[in-house]
Image 1 (spheres, one colour):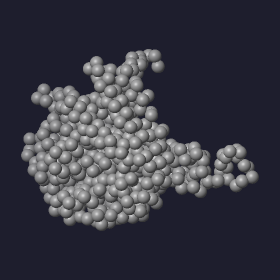
Image 2 (cartoon, one colour):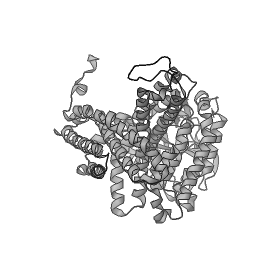
Image 3 (cartoon, helix red, strand yellow):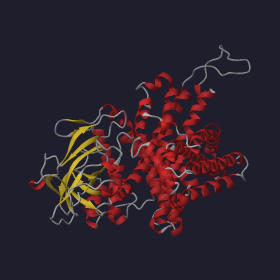
Length: 605
């Protein structure tokens, strides 16, 4: 994996060029490499050896606290001490001012070593949100302590009765009259579900970011999402210097969810304002308003979009981990004889199964999925750097591209790297579904990612219902331009002209299907097939990514890049031969606005 990571960063995305920008001027390619080396070592020593342990020794509640294995405590400590929680932050507040592209690449090692142990994705995302929308004091007290690893962070959106329907959340936030320097103070009452890392003893405090509604003058909650506000709700109350007051806030664990995967990370049901603790003798969990009332969802999307790209990277690295196990097994496991012109010769010794065409097919699929998804994730990370540090026009384009690509960056790896894990199990045969090998755990861990941070269906509705039509389709047009540029460049390179033509044709069919979906202007008709649209869109994007990577292979002259070239070109060929043709079936139901799913009556099931 490291060779591929280096190739994508150096020969494809040219991250060294970022050091020419003022924000990254103190860095050099050598410092980027040192960060990757450090994270790779910590992941290898503190995470990977305990991946199975945390899967078996699930979090448990002993009546007073949530108990996690010592290995999890050690891993968190090592990660926090690495400085990666604040990797992209300003140096005056303890950050490294690393490009986000390098930060994402470095964090990939931890996701591959043990996504179940987890790192600081939510903690960093929580703090990043506060840096964007919180007051100076909220940043100083809450975000700074999260960046240091002293405190952890969560995001609390879903509720038992509402699930993904945030319009229907019922958690109430009642304003208090007393002024508080940490922000307008409210008392929260309600329940939140599916809260990752919602209760543990890894840090001295946990900072919950909670969506809730402030009642109107009539005491009723405003319907829909426009009534949602965002609040900081610490597990332990703190003063303006970031010191714990010793008073427990009224947010308590109501239960642990026991999952098929990611078992090393607590997943919780939390109760707010149930009266178990009454700060100041009054009912309700103390919460501090972030931003303005009614703008909670807008603020929270800052964290949600970051988390969606993080989930995509986690899915990617699980696919990569399974691929590497399957590849190693296929090289060592001898079984069967090759088929020659005379058939099989039973007198010959068995050959490693990697010699069989069908095993190569499964390995090529895993390589195409995992390495393609990694390239996509790093490309999106590079767009983040462009958005924040590029010239004005370039930054605007990067932001627009990110809007369109975020649903793909989350959904595509979570679907197709899950398929890679399934193929890894298949390569191992019977051993694949036993605990003798880790591939069954990788599959279980990865199955959660199609649901994490917005289900597949939600990403599909976001893409077809919002992203490709917003601003008159400006984002889709910009992306189409980038794809066309790659196809045009590849068309001039020997060996790449055919896939370049195929990509151009696929892009044309995608554009036509997008228009056909909305031809009647009836959302129910267009969005009934949003998920097939998402799948087709994702495959076109990955075909583009693979062709662009192939171009980089042709242009790179280093011995390391040339060593990778045959394998990457083969993976690109596989994707165009076996995967890209799938889009026609998906786009077919989109273009004709196939009605069977929306017309199906519940009673008919």
